[in-house]
Amino acid sequence: MLAAVLTGREQVGLEERPEPEARPGWVVVEVESASICGTDTHQFEGRVDTPFPRVPGHDFAGRVASVGDGVDSDLVGTPVAVKPSLPCLECADCTEGRLADCHRKKLMGLWSDGCFTERVAVPRVNLVPRPDGVEAWQAALLEPLAVGLNTVDRLGIKLGETVLVLGQGPIGLALTRLCTLSGAGRLIVTDAREDPFRVSRAYGATDCIDVTATDVVSAVADLTGGLGADVVIETSGFPASTAVVLDVVRKEGKVAHIGWANDLPALPVVPIMAKTLTVFGVGGNGGRGQYERSIELVRAGRIDLSPVVTHTFALTDIAEAFHVASTKAEGAIKVLLTPR
Ligand SMILES: [Zn+2]
Ligand SMILES: [Zn+2]
Image 1 (cartoon, rainbow, N blue to C red):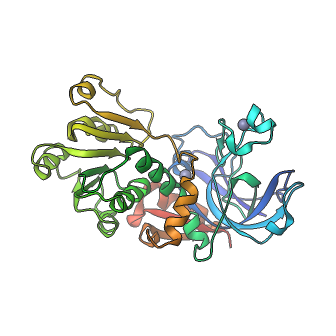
Image 2: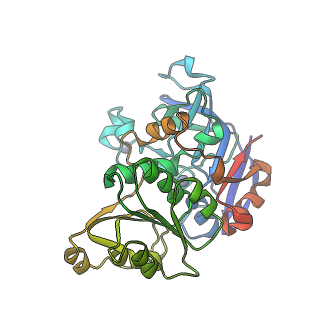
Image 3: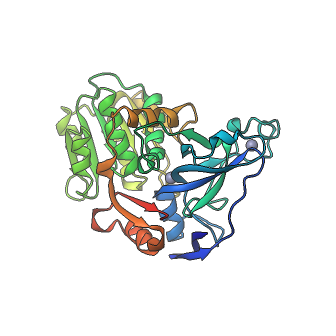
């Protein structure tokens, strides 16, 4: 079968790989749709240490093609979404069969070969059933939504609060929609590109700030009568954006940090005390039903994912797909791959 393989920095090609086999407790999934996420492009750019050669990719959906021992064979043919982190198979939870409880899960496509291929083996516990009305391409876009849902769960936004979402990449856009659904009043968003703002507005943003043209701190002060936002969510992972968070949140407000990079500034403690702030760190999708509830929000039509999909490529065009996703050329937001 055909697989996309990263062989070095900014080097990706196609290789013929052996068919995967379903071990006991595992299944093989026929990939119908996969999406390129920030982690994949960072691997491509050499900003995340990746053991090469590696088949990248972890956000995908498809159908069960075969099952290993101990897995109900009725699953064959079932449409599924797939959670992206694999259990370690070594910890106490894993060895006692509670794979879903593993606390040492590792991202596929980074620590093991991923989903930018035709078929891939995953543990049965990683499958989430895909209900009628949820297409494979939608289910390949659930991870940013689940991370956003984990954030909103933790923040406990109140109806009518002013929310500021810094960064309008896929997670920032998911949060814009989720904060609208959570009852945000004024909903301010920022980005260094104008491209995503058409989606931000469709998702309920009331004010879009281009950080390359406008000073965020004074703009937020103007929009909030000098008070700052009740809730500030940093999704961009850019040091300059992280650095203003404590300046744009109101006294007794709440802050969440999701945007991740290794060069972020340290969080100063004094303003956190002086403003009596609550600070949340969000390191993933939470694993407490957020993935399942994300599917339900899509199924129920509460979030329309079509505006974030700007490009779809065949697996055979993997080099072009990575180029577009990495450079964000042509207004790219989310790039989808279809194996066939
Ligand atoms: Zn991802
Ligand atoms: Zn484990």
